[in-house]
Length: 152
Image (cartoon, rainbow, N blue to C red; front, side, top):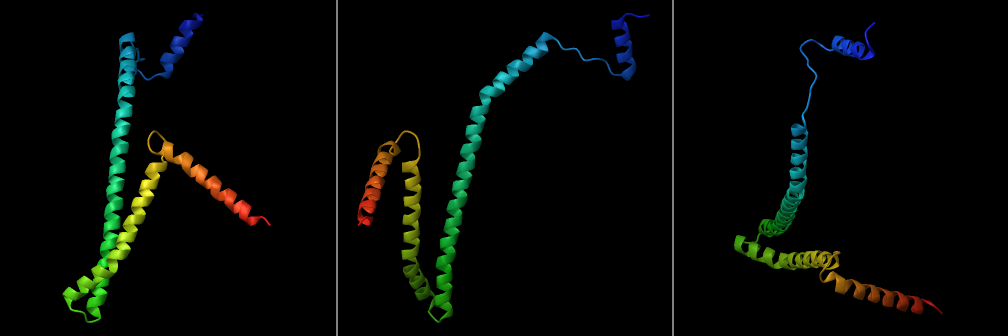
């Protein structure tokens, strides 16, 4: 009878096709893989920063173009409406711009305040660290005044 190790090798050889050989690795190959992993780990934060930065830029451009098209449609529809109702072309354009400028300006002010508010209230170093406590204090004062005014 064959020793146990020999029987295992014979069984493994029988289970394997003839053209497949067992793979052997050396320490050099294993250490090369570790070195590449370290290099990839070092490059990953830079890669992610670039991808996220470009994604935010693309998103910002998309939002701005979308808003510009929305306002353009608003103004042009006013021009078309005035022209269809019998206004001369130049007068229709002037009236549409005059009527639409208040709406477009108000929307721009709202957008600037919302984005500015997000920037001011965003966590991290900057103006938010000075503004947030003031807002909390103001909120507490409003709450106290409301509570005091609601009691008999």
